[in-house]
Image (cartoon, rainbow, N blue to C red):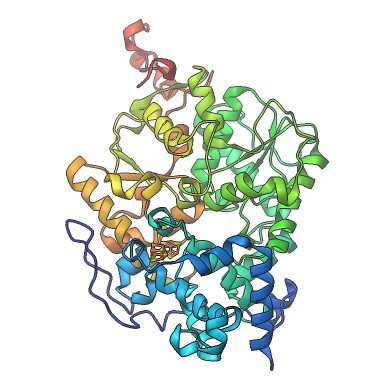
Length: 528
Ligand code: SF4
Ligand code: SF4
């Protein structure tokens, strides 16, 4: 499929040789006039765009104090240069975070600093030209806004925010990205990223209910638009249709069923994702977040729980309150929002879920910390909950677990390579090469610890890994949802044990059950 070489994995992550302009050709498709105008952006570049871009840049500097600080405070120390997975995977020096920032900083200096206005050649200041815009379009779409570089920068300069601002400026002059803007349009039109109509969503959920009943013998529900439900679940639409996402959705449903709560999905807000964050548009982010508030109010729920989606969790955790709050109509006894992992983790801590861990014995797991969960949010009410809860859930439902190398997980995690609005086939070379550091760490733990599967709690990570892992020699289904593992192991009250068919033949009926013959039910309260 590829017209580029998939990188070879070595025994350790190495700093590549510099390859000037190695990825200059990599650009996503530009949004069509229709996609642009649907979001209130100009349809294309027109005369005078340069001045409009600078005006917008000035607006953003006035609005976001952080952007001004980031433009002014870099001291070129170099600490960030080898921290970006896209630099490590491509060797292109413009994928060093400081170089990416400088694409914007050179324009900032030219128009917003004294020295740049009068002595541009002395301070590396540049006019806003089509050539500069092309560089922006290329390299600000080679940043997945993962924030890894910010962790290592002594000044905390966040290239993710710079990249969002650059994309916002490009949208404002008519140079938007097709993938993101088309998806945002679908959310407005059909309420989810996939453009799945309500009828199809309903039918999909009913099919899943039948599948679960066939498997378990229990009427586990995936309710839609239930007024007066206690919990509204908002989850990425990938959970409705694709592997391994859908197995996670089944896991949430089983957990809610076993907990005995009244929950619902919403056809009006059938999407947790908010791609507007990727393009830096406050207005679009607001409109998309507002749908969730309205759905919660219309349905009269008491709580909102968010499914496995990295950037959706970041938007919910960090921004919902200011975008669409206050959520004072919800029950104040519960966090707003609450992550599905926190929800399940609490039930596990309270000993309310029983598991047969052996159901996952065909796998040895590792865990990929998704960037937006790891570095841009938390879970629960103590620091590090976003690292511990997912791992504790996995260990509660699986016997075999090993972490990847310490400098590739938790706060130092490597991006999957497809985050930040880059999960599109027109950026496949970038996605494959950007995945290299994560694949390297996975290879190590596969060889050293016998890991067979990697769990994740982000729809983008799961989709990206399912695509790129085979290219690196791993199985396509080697990536799994955490709630898929929960689903495999959870023992719901009254569910089929799998022995029923055998028992029909009295000749082959098992001997009366002794305590020791029971499936190894493990109360997680006693677990690891
Ligand atoms: S935010 Fe992530 S992708 Fe962007 S420059 Fe920093 S490390 Fe690279
Ligand atoms: S680590 Fe921070 S201060 Fe140092 S070069 Fe990178 S962005 Fe600049």
